[in-house]
Image 1 (cartoon, helix red, strand yellow):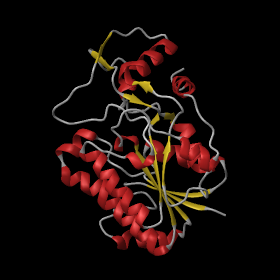
Image 2 (cartoon, rainbow, N blue to C red):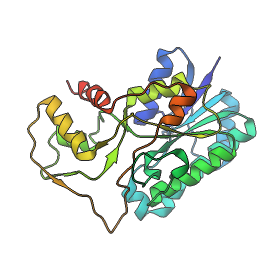
Image 3 (cartoon, rainbow, N blue to C red):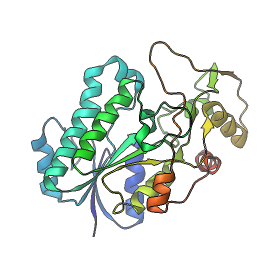
Length: 278
C-alpha cells in the first residue's frame, strides 16, 4: 500500500494531487511552508527533511515545490537557486539515500523549439527554465521521475492571466498570438499522476494535451464559452529583457506509449476550466 508525501501541498497542483489521493483512498501527508503545518520542513539542509521522512516513512514523495515567477527568477538569482535548485537537491539526494521513489514536477518552460518537443530536446531560455533543468538532473541522478507539465485552473487569488481577465482586473489586454502551449486542466493532470504513481520510471515525461493552442486563442475561447465581452489587441510577443519561449508545446507520444495514457483534447480541457467559473 502506498504512503505518499506531497511537498508543497498548499500550492495549486499540490492541493489537486492531495484531493485525488483522497478520492482514491491513498494514504498521504501534505507538507507546506507554514511552520504550523504538522509536516513542516524548511529545506535548509538535509537533516530536517531526513527527520521528516523517518517520521512519516512514505514510499513515494511527490515534489511540487517551485518558484514559477519567471521575472523573479530572472531578477533574483539567489532566490531562484534556493527555491528551485537547492530544495530539489535536498529532496532528491535524501530520497535517493533512503531509496524512496520520488516524482518531481517540472515545466514545459524548459522547451523553446518550433513544434512539439520531445523529452530529449530541452532548451531553456531563462533562469527559471535553467533552474528546473538543473533540478531535474539531481532527481534523475537519484533514480527519480521527472514530469514536465503545464496546467490550467481557477486561482482563488486571481494570480493567473485568465483569472484577471475574467474578473476584469486588467484594463488593457494584449494577447500573444505567437506563444503556443498544450496544457491540461489541473484535475486531469492530478488524475494522471495519481493513477500512475507506481508506473513512472527513472526518466523524464511530457504530460500535456494532444494538440496545442496559442495564448491568444486560449483566452478568446474562454471568453466565448463564458460569454464575456472583453476588448483586446492581438500582438506578437517580443522581449529583449527576459527571454521567454514562444513554443512550449510538448510531444506526448512517450507517455502515451509507455503508460497507455489517454490523449486529451486541449479544447475539452478548456471547457473543464470554464466549468469552474459557472
